[in-house]
Image 1: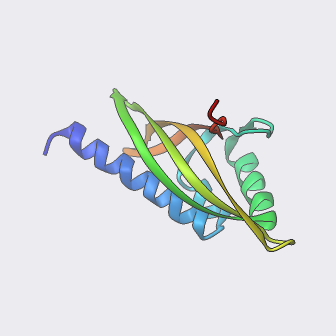
Image 2 (image 1 turned 180 degrees about the vertical axis):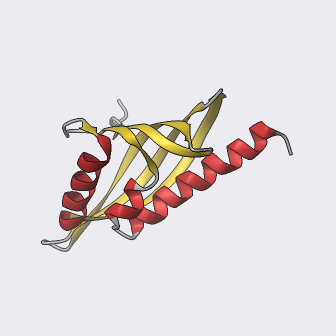
Image 3 (image 1 turned 90 degrees about the horizontal axis):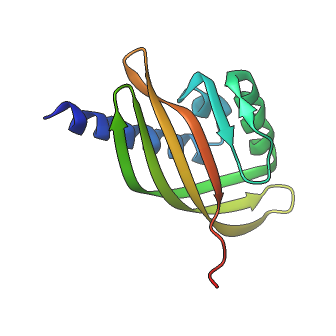
Length: 133
């Protein structure tokens, strides 16, 4: 197996772990998949920088909503100790207090960095898919 094939499998597994952690609503599980200096840029939200802000962001979010994402990877590109993945997803969002759910479609851009020999999420951006015209 070539190194790039091994790296691709590791990135795919990391994204699967990310999905599982979101489904479990466990902030610590999500944060552990990011580098300590990670940046998250979400739709309609302030930029989140570093592990402490990430933890607060996910703790707060999980107290309000339950996420059930399904992510499809469109591409993974490697360059040295960095890689990026472009993906799209359908996410079932349940507002806990109202017990009401809806589905939204998003686009994601992950930037990964080798951290201590393993891939971690260094930058993550997502936004909603605009309606078709």
